[in-house]
Length: 158
Image (cartoon, rainbow, N blue to C red):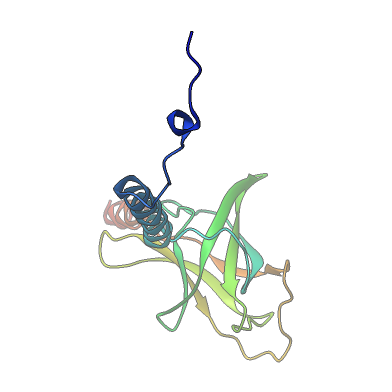
């Protein structure tokens, strides 16, 4: 057997290649896609800039988590969760930090348009006392269902 010389074991010098650039481009593209998907879906990982308040309703027919919370037509938050509490519905809302709700504000469930989506409308009260994070809005108005109104009207005609 012959001995190999040092020239046969030379490792070629590494340089940046097309594969590296394609890999970096793919990673950056995936990161941008993920960022856009999260923003379009309206998801948030950190709960900064919001505080939670709740309200108890007799009927929330059609209201879903993610629905808007508005004052004077301006979005100030969204419904974060809905759960059953005895025979009523407890609605928890995430409100923007700069918005101060008062203890006599009225939370009502309304519909956008004739058959539109449900949202929570906050009507401002006159009190000076502000609701703290985690408190509950006491004055509420449940959803008005067209079926109930039509049924009452028909029974009055009989």
